[in-house]
Amino acid sequence: MVRIVWGNIRPGHWPAFKAAYKKACDMSANTPGMKGRWLSHDRFDENAFYSVTIWETEQHMLDYASSPLVRETLFPMVDEHFTGTYSMDVADVEFMDHFGSFVPPSGEKKAA
Image (cartoon, rainbow, N blue to C red; front, side, top):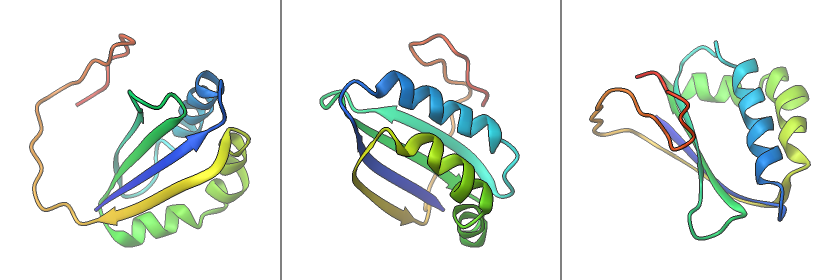
């Protein structure tokens, strides 16, 4: 299962939003059923992002989304950066191909 969130952040907030998102990821690193997570910055709209999470089951995703950690800690960390414009889609993964480790332009190595 994949959950894709598109959203807009306030102008000039990308560095602070990215830092808050990374901190939230660190705090939720051992989330049951979460298989992967990506944050992408739109190439054509500097205030837009995509957050993609891969889940083992729908119940894992729902448990995480409704958890006190998310509601009371993680959302408040990133909320100040949002404009309020976002959309979320959930889909079943029908096919996946994996090509090893990925090194983003920042030079941070991401585990496979």
